[in-house]
Length: 300
Ligand code: PAF
Image 1 (cartoon, rainbow, N blue to C red):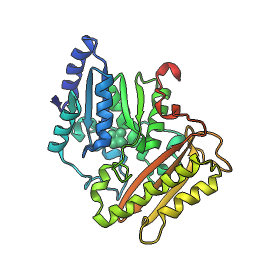
Image 2: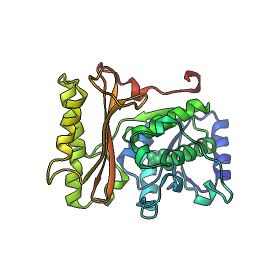
Image 3: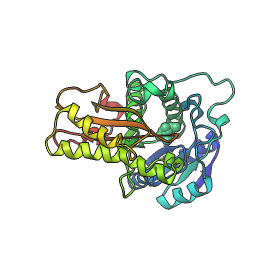
C-alpha cells in the first residue's frame, strides 16, 4: 500500500494505474476507521483493480461548537486496517493541501441538504459536497463507496454527481452494526459504558419499527411511535432525541398517512454529549434498488 500526502504525487500515481487500464475505487473517510469503513474498502477492492482510501478530517463540514478539534484520530491503526482490507493507496492530505490559502469556492447543495441533519447542522452538507467534489476531481475514481448510515449524505452526493456531471458511480453499502445492533461510527468512541448501553435504544427503536413494518404495519404515526417508545424509554433511552422522521427515501420529503413507497426512518439523538445518527430503509415491496442503484452520469 502506498501512502501519499500530496495531490501532485497522487495524480502521478493514479495516472500510471489508469494508463494500465486499472479501474479505480475510492473510499473517502475522516479516519478512526471501523468495520463500517472496512465494508466499503473491501467492496471497492473486490470490484476495482486499485482502491484509494482518503483520511481527511474536513474542517468545512464542522459547525461552531462541533467536535472538529477532538474528532478521534489514530493514524497508525488506520494504516494497518487499510492494508488488511486491501487498499492500494492511502491519501493523507494536510488541510493546507485541500484548502490552500485564498480558498473561496464551495459547492452549495440544494433541498436534499435542508431537512434532517441539515436543520441542525447548517453548512454541514456544503462542506461535505465541497470536499467530496474536490476529492472526486483529485482521485477521478470509477466507483466511490459510501455507507448507508449517513443516508442523507449519500443522497446529497448522488445529486451532486448528477447535477455536476461528475464521471463517477456512487455505490451505497448497507450499515455495518455491532453484534448488539449499534451502528458502527467513529463517534461511538466517545461513549462511556453506560452511554453505550443507552445508545442501543437507537437501533432497538429502528429495529422494532422495521419488525412492525414487515409484519404489515403501514401507519406512519404507529411506526414512529414504536421507534420513539424505545428511544425515549426512561433510564434506557437517549438523552435528547433531535429528530425521528419517516421520509421519502429519494426526496427526503416528510411522509404522512400510510407508507406506500420506499421510505427511510431516520434518527439523530444525543447520548451524553455524543450525537449519533442511524436509519433503516422500509420498502413496501422488497425493493433494495434505492440503495444499490449506482447512478452514472448517463442516468441523470
Ligand atoms: O462520511 C464521512 O466520513 C465524511 O462526511 C466524508 C464523506 C469523508 C467527507 O468528509
